[in-house]
Image (cartoon, rainbow, N blue to C red; front, side, top):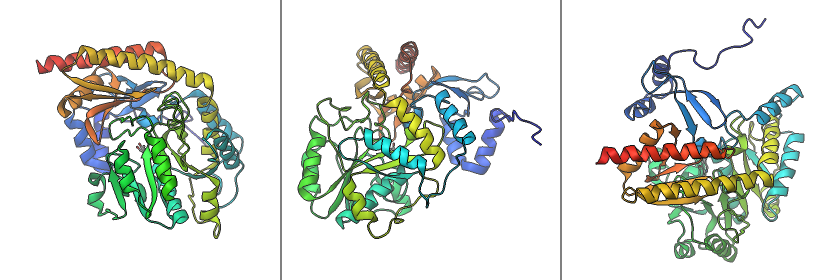
Length: 436
Ligand SMILES: Cc1ncc(COP(=O)(O)O)c(C=O)c1O
């Protein structure tokens, strides 16, 4: 018999004791890293745009209430614990669903596949599922190799596609060197440089993989026409084009797809693959997606329909949740909301830049995906800390440490956004005071 139907999950121990457990059983260097920044806090209750901590920066202090502008890279597009998503989870469980069996066929996978095909650019209409973004990226690269019978892969310096096999091979050396994972066929070139792309894409290249707005690389904005030209280069050489919209897709730019009008309204490019992760979960149940054109299915699955499998990827529950998420996030009213909030946010950030021209070099982004570049790395890191202390959770771009990235949940409201801007400003004011 269940003695305790309201089992407690948050605040079972003090923050201090939990940090000790984390150190002992999970990852001691990570705890030391956070403590060294004075950020030895553990997330507690969360709702909407707010993430509370168990206690304050010092143990025993009251919990912090942070506006979550990290959104875990877009996992929390719908905020924390979105009620519509929670209801679908409950309904799915009560309605008879579980993970399903990945070897068998699935009603939920079929329905989600249809929905994705309706929403995807051009004739991208087939989908293979995974659990994580990296898994779905690996799938796209594997499929490119199977289709082209080539091994080469071109990615962007500073770009990030995950920590798994082929995804890791596309990334920067500091993520892969320690694992002795430097595949000679994988080459990086500067993002946005079309001449470098022309030189790199030769007839032994299977695929080009790019984020539409590289996040870890510093929220970079390619010149207009770049992606259309990459498409042409790929067509001329028989190379497949993989677009990673793990962070920039699903409405983050104010359009459903960054590559299809979200980056530049008049630039609508149809790649061969679109990969999605993070936000597919709505922060509730993991799911990732590798969607592609039908000719790819023919080449990959023709001899063996089980050549790509994932036991927990494309679970029935995950698909039911993703269907509801797509219903919400593809609604034109929802996308208009993101655009409106994006305009307010851009204006606010540009005003802050204008007020601190000696600290902030550039503000760039689209919709609700923004990078603030400082003149130097120390300022961006101190700025990040100062802003977190004002109650806005955000972080710097790992591969461009002079830039902080800001991704508020897409459900953020005007009043909340103004509060976030006020707190970011006050974080920068305090940074400026420390420096003078
Ligand atoms: C653009 C992009 N692609 C892929 C990934 C990998 O996703 P995951 O961590 O779910 O494997 C990430 C994760 O941060 C990402 O930002």
